[in-house]
Length: 237
Image (cartoon, rainbow, N blue to C red; front, side, top):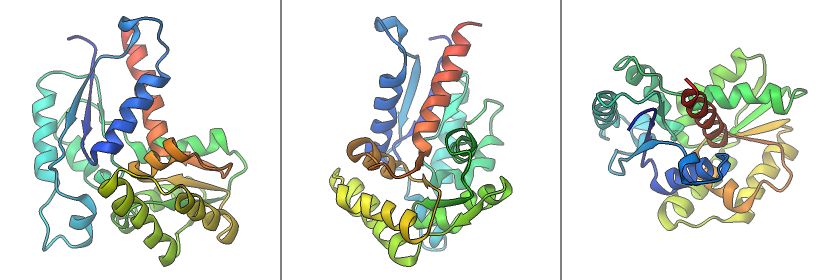
């Protein structure tokens, strides 16, 4: 297969399925051959990213299997890698150092989209896993881009973890009321001009329940759009 990209997925599988669904849905097609060429690595047994970031002394590192995937897939020569797991970007620099093939950086894509979609935004909130909040990947980049970063309250963070782990990961179910309540608190109580959906399980909630007119940037959606842009551009080369 020529002119393809590799998706480093399975973190979690439902979130990866959401990425694939959006990828296929947004790709302009009229026949089978218009769809994109890609390899999906659904590595479901990669250890939990948040568990390791929060307590590395008692949990297995996800870096080892992710590094193996990058090395293996690099031998096949994809044009780029997509990594549809925000928390896994904790290992981004280490993974990119293993290959000359570019790995798309989902958090950076999401932050870059703010200026395009919400040009008046000043206060940028984030809902994500405990691991993503702890590793500050979004926080540092949001501030570097000139925005005021808004951390969710402990209550919102706990509700978000319930949505991610108890609902989507454990049951493949989205509590739409909980998702909308989280967004409402971020916008109305914490006065966010825009909220970044910084976990692909939250992107599952967004796909199934919608954001009820609250201002959001879906990081996974931005990754999908960039994947399509690069893949279609490569076809023309």
